Image (tube, rainbow, N blue to C red; front, side, top):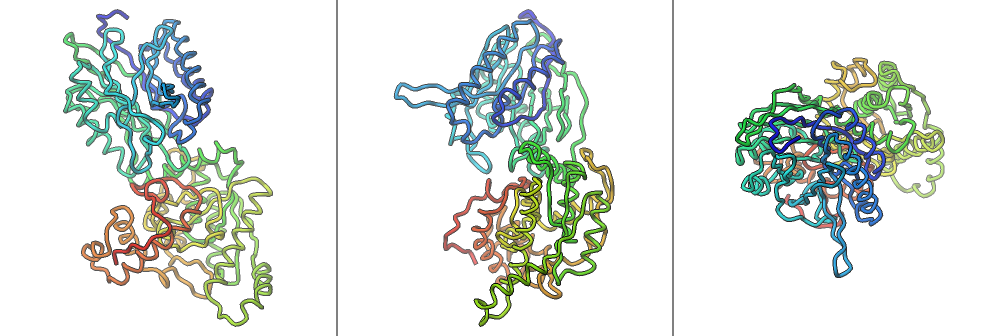
Length: 561
């Protein structure tokens, strides 16, 4: 294409990555390029070559060296006259003092060489992000002149803040291309489009491409939701959420350097709570498959948390890879036995029953001497939970499926969970879902088949599971609300205390709750930190999930109530 080109074909490769598997990531990029030989440029998400987020893995010199070698190979392949490639990777620079600096970069590969590289300037260091831990910020990036077009290449956070894009606009950029690794959070898809990147367009009067990745990576999940904005802020393209897509966009230069994108498909993005459900499905699917588990096993109690986890697992993996186990005690009701059986039958997964009474009796006998002068209390309840955990872990060890835990965020917030009992396992789909969110998701799933489901059936649980009062069934006639406020109230308290970092007085002022009740919940929240440190990973859904976002000391004495 000559310097006076009037049209461009740019492909947005919204795709997943495997952190650390550089060869597989490179081959996936090659496959995209092979499918679009007539394009001018193919775009890939942030750090596509090494995977995102790499965390401290990127500090290994061998990883950076391998990335540099593969990037050179990919560049050489562009000598065939086909599309150029914009590839995210890392760059390691040896300093004179013997130290090394690592940069998050994009590289423009064209004509058989690395035609240009640009380093990320704005390094996010909040919430889930700690890029300042591993990367050095690059300078304000210059525009890249490519085939007669002046490209501005803000990398992820460079586009979320105004400085870099304004600088590129002042340098004469004609088109902004922002490659991202932007994890899912509730309402984030709309915030990216309407609040953040439309603002960059308004500030620069330049068209903009936002490209994001998809797929799960440990506790993060990426929803895609890529888009193209013309210089008037109008949306020219919206890619689907949660799924890989290769969107071909066609651009025309009107002669004065103003590029306009031809209108394309505008995908509909998930509304609530379908977006939450898909986040849990995609995250679990990729966690299980990439860690090479043959499936999952979980305790199915007849309650709503385990029922929705079984449904999520069947949607993510297929019902043949979901093994449910009912572990009744003498406190388990006939209703729970029936609900668990009904749920497993509706999902179509295996259900076994292993009674824990023999083990409970054995522990009672073992501890009778030590406990002789003590009344029965929560200790005996927790022994039941731990027996269930040991039993499920034995099945996992013997047969290979990963054990799912099923506690929700409300319970994990206040410590209403048994460490080494129902907290035992490898992954928790509900870790960042409050109890009222669980109710909403269960109702939605009973009435809908998710677009990405590998188990297209509905409903997936008896209505009685959703409507009955929640209970751990560890003592006669036990109800969760014997120990906790009603979940609708508890979740309001917790949302303010966790997501908003509010004080007890703030919560009381907003909702009128009894102050002592709120202070008690704050106290439980703080005391349960030691449990949460030992909890399995689970997908981030909110702005303040436990572990990656909210990082509290275990030992401290501060309270607001």
